[in-house]
Length: 360
Image 1 (cartoon, one colour):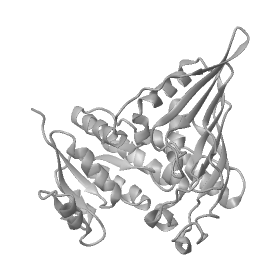
Image 2 (cartoon, helix red, strand yellow; image 1 turned 135 degrees about the vertical axis):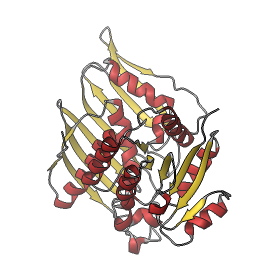
Image 3 (tube, rainbow, N blue to C red; image 1 turned 135 degrees about the horizontal axis):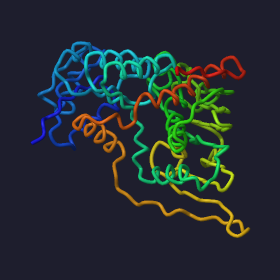
Image 4 (cartoon, helix red, strand yellow; image 1 turned 30 degrees about the vertical axis):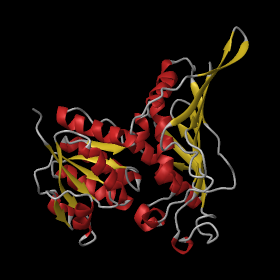
């Protein structure tokens, strides 16, 4: 019989409810505590989700004093760094919601703390659990594209701007890039084995979010709703990144992998004004190559699945904790994702290319 894993949840917002539902699907897992900085919110969360055995705390540091096997960190973005570092130092394995942090410096400290303490820092990119993402990774890493020299990724919603904590730089740190851009970056970078970024040249704007015609909270909207960047990597690879919460266009195009021997075109799943980005399933995969001198395009059949991707990422975290395995999506890897977002923010502010400095 497996030992019951004791889990704490830090942050009592909407995404924390998804963690509760995912943990409830798993045997021998108990949510024993919830913490939220808003007085009384943790207790309200416990009542709403009917977790009577869980303790409520207004200070997450009190939660960390408990005997816990792991914590889900579901706080606003600006709190990810401090709560993660404190949780690791307290001897807890961490399931962290994306984005990893606000700045590159924060992400580096988080990853270094995980390495120093020996506890897990796992970052929640649930789109990886679509089995079709594995097909993309297998094709790119198989060598059949030859040398991949150019990648284009991102996506855009015609209308898909959130509100609340997502649109405040003081709380979220960034807008569309942190919310949905990190998913597109992870999809492309993970397929290529997370190459090391060197420089970023970027542009961002928020013409839609700050316009009352398009957003009811326009007066407090101070993050980007659109961004583009050219990122250079080691080994003469470039990535064209573009992301949008709102635009007068149906799409910003598919993700493209261009190689010397073949190319891959990937579209996201979903239809409608809130679709068009890689925050869920894959819509189609096409392979372009030459056969005996003839231009050939092959549609790669998708795996039809009924997986709840969010539940799968929580399950993977729990199994890694239970079995003493490494983090399924380690913070040490996602530092490079955060480095790009950090570079985009810096470059768009000063309107010129910036260098990315990563620790050895």
